[in-house]
Length: 360
Image (cartoon, rainbow, N blue to C red; front, side, top):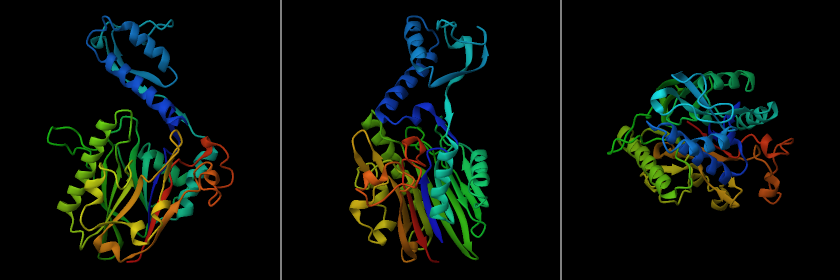
């Protein structure tokens, strides 16, 4: 049985701001979007109209305003870009991120990675919706996954966690943790920690926890603390709901940090939880799954961990990077991207897939 995790960076479309090659430029735009949204939520726009209008002009390519009801007409801004309402009480709605559809080639390359890995249980990060995964499974993958699950998570951009399973390994049950809160009442997970129970054979159960932790951003202290709370909560779930010495448990996903980082420490050091690449003695210097071009950093941020009970059943593990752009350059010729990925927009994803073979 093969299990894999893959950040697909959406399957059919992606917010324009998140589909930029320059991550720092995207972060700056996201900061403006956050300011724009905050200002539009003010009860009065007195003294703020000029700033709101400037931000609106700067962000027209990236956002739209979804108006549910209004006392000032169908539009918040005139054709000349002037703000019409005087405050939040004049309208009801929200700021939405504009999306752009990927090319058919890009979508097919994403499918090629998944078909090449041939996982029986495929964990997916950044899936738009259940309907999107259904169409992707049917149109691109040839209906390989009989059971699929996507739960709307806490990310307003619509990037959710999903899991697909072949018919031989049906999904038995699932549990979401989108409502998990810390001692201050704040939501812990940026997306979710999705717990899925599957039946690989009669009388045997395997539990898969799929995650997508908070990304690093321009506020490192805040994002690091958030990621650490998420790591600690996953560790707590493992220690309180499972017996890792007896239960077959897998923790998978994009954790957005290095294995030796302080934020991931609570999870990485969970007793009886093991990185599959450690089990197969995969070269520690060749575990990167993401290349951050702005700082030319090779990052290990995608993971598969297994419980002690599963450790002896892991018979192989590795990475599939060929869906990435410019792989030959990134690996000094050791690996090559799939033929046809000759532009960054055609890449299946900027993440590698991680897989493990388990014999039970």
